[in-house]
Image 1 (cartoon, one colour):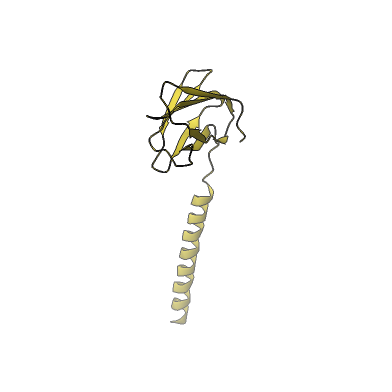
Image 2 (cartoon, helix red, strand yellow):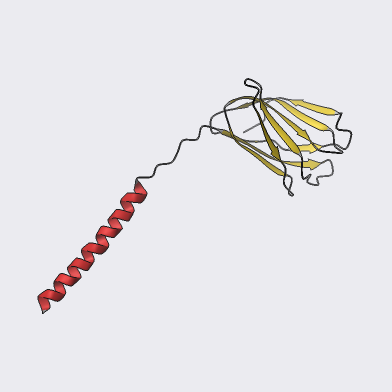
Length: 136
């Protein structure tokens, strides 16, 4: 009788160890994908510092002409993910505000660049151009 109890315990221990080993090997085999695209994020406010929702953001790769669009949320935040590395310009437009354009931006592999803007009240026919590299 005692031998049978020992065999049952040993079988249970081996089963638990086998399941644990299987789980660990399954999880350990997953690798992290390499990041190839860049991400552009930011917050859009007005000159008083209040957030501006529903701003249309156009992120254009000036080398390829490909444009990615984003819109600010209720907190004035936007995100443009998965951008291929290269030179970009960003245009921000909202009804009742001057359009703002940022040029001379260069995104690199895996970059996470933040471009915040403060839009002035005015006609959408007015455009404010800001040229230069933003800090990453």
